Length: 344
Ligand code: MRU
Image (tube, rainbow, N blue to C red; front, side, top):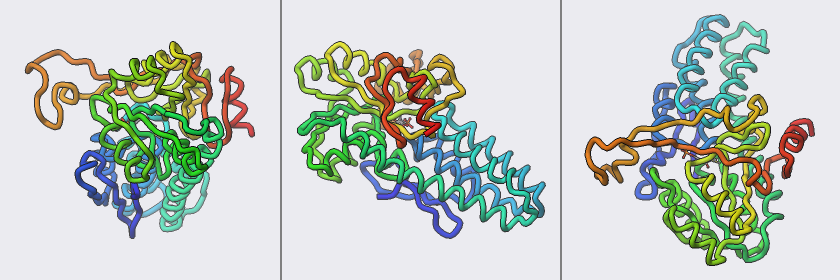
């Protein structure tokens, strides 16, 4: 199952809002459709929205048919701004867009065909590097997984959230491929149920044993000694190792510490934002109240009730046992170990 596919100038995106009921691809022929897909979580997960935005930038430039380098650059910047404004937390989005813009700016060519070709190739490179990076995350991460481990994960940091294989689920996949016979608890992940709809679906397809729990069952699960480790993905990691990830992650990290369970974060370097000193600087997206007041379109709360709906939370670095990246495993103190991975 591919999260996205580039086919003859069209971006096909697997519509994740329809899963697990329907496997449907939407066709994106312009950046506005891509921006809408990111905003409405048809495509979601930090690395996946980075790759989708890169292709979105290509589509926006192609659609404008710029006549010269100047027009092309102006258009690319304008389209990048639209795409960047869709979701604020995952840094992979702006990371991917900036990578394309820098590539353009660094290439003096006046030939618009050559420049658009360059953009397409860079978008492909982002996609391909993410797939390969996730395999490396899996290889590094599986070494931390004991045979027979019962693993708790939250949200979906799988193939669906990336260009393939997944980050947290990449670690789980690799452990399974290494013959470790792991089993997984997937927390449902209110309000939008990425755990129930996506992680459960993805793992079932791979025949990795998975048990679904609601978010409020995690404490009792750990108290009963039923979790050997937690592994989650990340949307942005600050230079001190604080991690922004799906709302509920912080709670799981606190629980893991209380119960002596290792808590791992798996993410590529493109998720690490060394420009930010700590998690306090990470912008946290707040989403529509309807996501909380309604379940699958059905109201489950009184009309007009006040709602707070942050999509992510910050897990402080001190609660994280290790950060598994595509360039190796970082351990505390993270300020040094994360910076070291970029130099390697
Ligand atoms: O709101 P979402 O579904 O985009 O949130 C996704 C997450 O929080 C993931 O854990 C994170 O992006 C890592 S995906 C490899």
